[in-house]
Length: 368
Length: 169
Image (cartoon, rainbow over all chains, first blue to last red):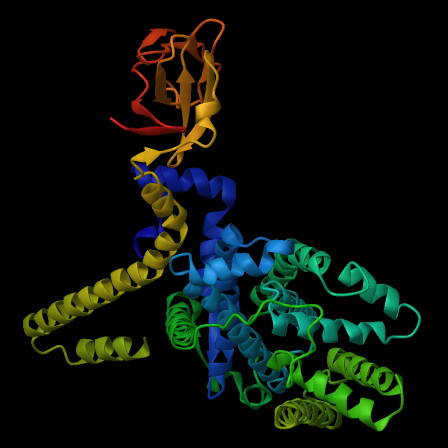
């Protein structure tokens, strides 16, 4: 880096080359930002790595997903093509296992990222759009998970999707039509696989990239948020490290750990492929969605038992929608650390949300 | 990261024996560097080898399919005099010709010029490539006109009862 501090003034070939690109692309401006960017250093700094880890697992998804795309065939051959990937193509089991594990790890670190951002109150002014774009990315990630889950068309994914699509169909008025449109017919089948495939590999990635770029742009624009405990300290008492190279190297070290964890899971617990989905077979006992949908699944199950008919489902959908809305609107009423009352309300909402999610998920697994 | 800068600053502050210090730091730096290098190569290998094998599987399978030495094209015995039939010899297209005089010949059907699939033209009794107008002799496979640089690979043909067996020479 010391060499490149005055590259433009050098008359060497490298200097001229730098000058050529710098004049046209404004590289020294970017370099300047990178060199002056700092990251706060304090007792809660570890949470700053969670967004980067989510990004890492997303990158793994792009690579492994593209590789799976080479042999995967949507539609009638879906199951057989996944079978071929898993049992016939060299290392196909590993690529598929890494894709599934990385998806789950991505959802997990995304949740950790979201709650750490929440409890550090990083959604406050001027970072509201960071919070909102992050929530959109979370919804997209979960849709990625839901649509990808069906693609192998084994027994479990078939029934999970069947049940999952029953939920929107319970919504008044538009519900049934929306569910049929998603399914491409009255039941889950080949048409659904084609639709989910298009969603999973074209529409969702395009939307995700858009919101990810916006999200990262905002992170760059506003820098890392300080948690309230740090905000209270005088500026002279706060510590920070350089983004380049110090934070970046730590970030990369985290990515390396993440790669190791992923490799370990993918190899030691290779992702299973169930029996081929059979539309006339009855649903196997203990059918349940992926863990990140478990809380909603359990809520609907419980409410469905408490209330007659579709009333329970409608109440459940309303509860999830309202909770999501409150969650999204927190930055509008918990706006600054000056307002102690609203700040406390915000914290309690977070505790309630986290406790509720964990309790419903544990309950869901216990009730299987 | 902060550790290394601490070490450096301590060294700077109490720089009594710069010669010894620099020796230590150079050898340590070199050691750390080579360990990092070895690990990096290991990681790149561990990630790229499975990907390479994954992508290469069909290539390997095709290569083993190409190992075949003998093929009996279905219904080949029904090919009339002056007619031909194309078939797969392993993973490559091949052409079987039943000449007017009752003789049989078979060739690899991939043009030696730029890889198009050639065709037997019975009216002119020649093998023709439509891409760039290459012409081969229908009995020997030798190039006769156009750009082909080499003869088509010739296979051996045997007729046993109702079966035509094409094999490598």
